[in-house]
Amino acid sequence: MRFKSGLIIGIFGLIVVSLGGWFFVIGISLLTYLALLELFKMAEYTGIKPATKTTLFSCTIIIISTYLEIKGIIGKEISNAILPISSIGICTWLLLQPKPGKISDIATSIFGLFYLGLLPSYWIKLRELENIYNSTNYNNNLFSNLDNFSGFNVTLVTCLLIVSSDIGSYFVGKRYGKRSLSPISPGKTIEGLIGGISCSVFTGIIFATLFKWENSILIGISFGILVSLMGLVGDLIESMMKRDAKLKDSGNLLPGHGGMLDRIDSYIFTPSLIFYTIIFIDSFKIF
Figure 1 (cartoon, helix red, strand yellow):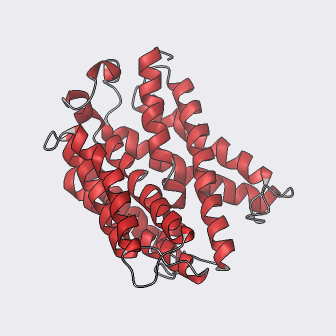
Figure 2: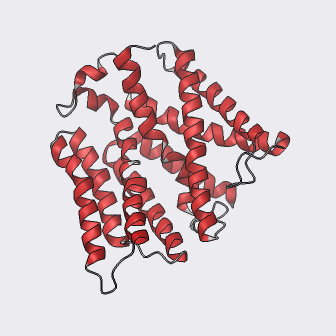
Figure 3: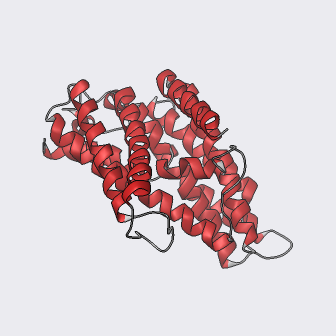
């Protein structure tokens, strides 16, 4: 059952990444919607009562507006305004409840907005990278030397690096793991971390070469290390929240895998870092 669930998730991801456009936007919105429900369910186990409906709606709007901004349908100022306005709306909603909210209610709601709204929206920016080059909403001088970095290639490679890092850390950690990496997740080991980074770097070099990126070895190494580390951070953050809620999994949506948040935790912090790394590389002509 675990294998079947993993295969279905993988096929779904490959399809939406390949199709791009609104299919990708809807796919990201759906995944984050389900993950946010699980996040707030965990929060409720600790006595927190977040503004669930308002935050769910706001996160979806942030992701959709990112795509509309890239397409030039709405201005960058309008898109940038959604996050602070949503924050105000969430706080106002909590203020108007019969029983006044607590600091933890506000903090969890705003964190959910950032964690599963703003951060996942960078997947849209990665997938639409070549459209950003031509968008009037962006400074095109920042993307003057990135012709080989197509949105599909970068998005696909980033996803594959996360998968290869997970596989490497699992098998190496299971076979050679002895030293615990963090008390937050005792099953993770330093040996597993090294194995995950190594597999991610190896995969990065292969695909950077395949897609003919300049200085493919350096790019592959850089992306491999960054993605592996950010995937680990995302995993540990979710483990910390589950530990606080005294739960083994974030949910039971996916047989053998737990909840949706359990499956996408490694994908949350990664896209923003890769997006700005690409801009950094181009701006300073590092490679």
